[in-house]
Amino acid sequence: MKYAHIVGWGSYLPERVLTNDDIAEMVETSDEWIYTRTGIRERRIADTEETTATLAFEAAARALAVADMHPSQIELIIVATSTPEYNFPSTACQVQDLLGATAAGAFDLSAACSGFVYGLSMAHNAIATESVRNALVIGAETMSRVLDWNDRGTCILFGDGAGAVVLKRSDVPGGVLSAVLRSDGSGGDVLNLPAVYHSPLPMLADYSPNGQKNTISMNGRQVFRFATQVISSSILDALRRAGLTINDVALIVPHQANTRIIETAAKRLKISQDKFFLNVDRVGNTSAASIPLALCEAVEQGRLKPDDNIVFVGFGGGLTWASAVIKWNVTPPEVSRLDRELQRTRYLMARGRSKLRRWGRRWGAILGGSPTPDARMRDAQKPRHHEHPEE
Ligand code: UT7
Image (cartoon, rainbow, N blue to C red; front, side, top):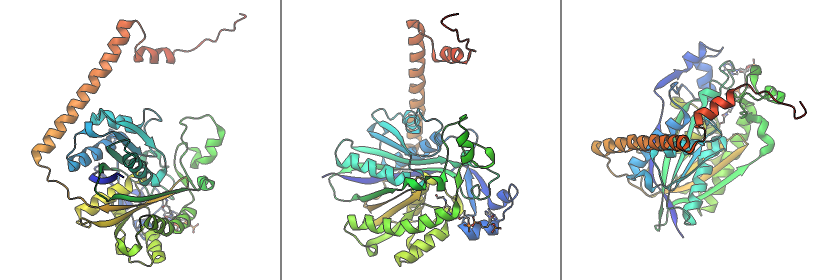
């Protein structure tokens, strides 16, 4: 039996802060309404240059630095996201390229706000069954790009960011002790984000507010009820599978959606709300990124000690929900400034090598007489004259 230990963690938040007061200038709302109903004060918004993949890369690079590992040691990259730039290439492949993780398989995972825990469970299984030695699990989102900024029911909630962990194979018992994944597709209409861009299908218009496409729509009350119902049972399920009880838990790192949801869950579990780590006030709901982002902050604040049992719990669109129990038995190595500089150079070199491979493909195509990707694109954009065979 092999164990999957978390040996690295990293997060990245865009610089731009959007406060509740800023949103009150866009829609009819107030700081007081948003804070009392959700616990959110502000959130971060990605710059126009930033994408889900670049946020994910920054978080992953930091996690690798903490793990003191080279990207080529990573054999699996899973990115949990609902806001990929493309259906394919996956965000995970973009991250693989940016990191220069030359030995890694890479794929995206769609389980909305539960995505990080789903990804952790997949990576844990791959390590425990010895199909890979090390894996990167990333949650990354640019939620600001899929919000209807006229819908005060949703635009107040979400923010952008990314968080990552490195999982490493070990013979020492510990790491991910259990994970329980659940879903209920009958609740798909309660919280959704249409995926087919510029689709002519009329049904998509029904899905999105104000006739806009590809924005989140949500029945807030139903999501609230669903979340408060599943959090406690999911945590208890995962603990049972790990052979532990709630009294053995040092810290619960929940999906950061709403402080009131966590208050209700704490009451149901008959535990103090302090056992839940919360940073929703400063980052809002960052969907799949929220648990690893909160984990990094909990570590920074010294909330975790070696041998602590911690629980991750996610819930969201799908509907999906999931919990994982982790034995936190790591002390991070010191990463010097020189190490950091070396790592930055390594990523610049990875970009250089990626460019060379692209040029290689282009010149290979030219010399081989086949059209280059650019020529193919130009060709695809030419107006087509459909000729009837009989004409
Ligand atoms: O990852 C999971 C993501 N989703 C969630 O976490 C959502 C969970 N749900 C919630 O957090 C809450 O349902 C919300 C914060 C979204 C809404 O709070 P609520 O207490 O459920 O409000 P509501 O939707 O029932 O609306 C109550 C009133 C309505 O006005 P009337 O009809 O009573 O006059 C809304 O129009 O509040 C109004 N309202 C707002 N007022 C000011 C709705 N949004 C706003 C707003 N500012 N932003």
